[in-house]
Image 1 (cartoon, rainbow, N blue to C red):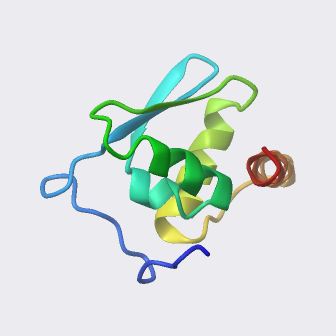
Image 2 (tube, rainbow, N blue to C red):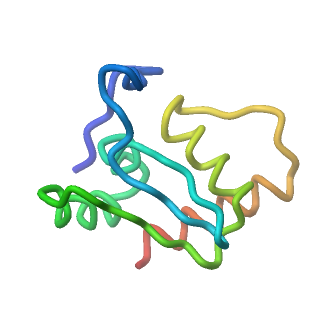
Length: 101
């Protein structure tokens, strides 16, 4: 079961620096494991397996950096606005992929 965090809760980078990297088509973004684990139970299980590791990197070769950025905004804020229908479709397909890994 995924437990929702408080609405719009984002770790302060100065108090809680990102603890993982996510790579999409060669571009790297930093993130917090606890936040990304909210995206899917699959990610939650995967990130739980590497919770004791100092370094953690999630590689998504079939996800565009733009789609990754939208998914990160959703994970951190619970919503995103101003995206095209194509971007919504890309994010939707990525979420389906994460659910069925």
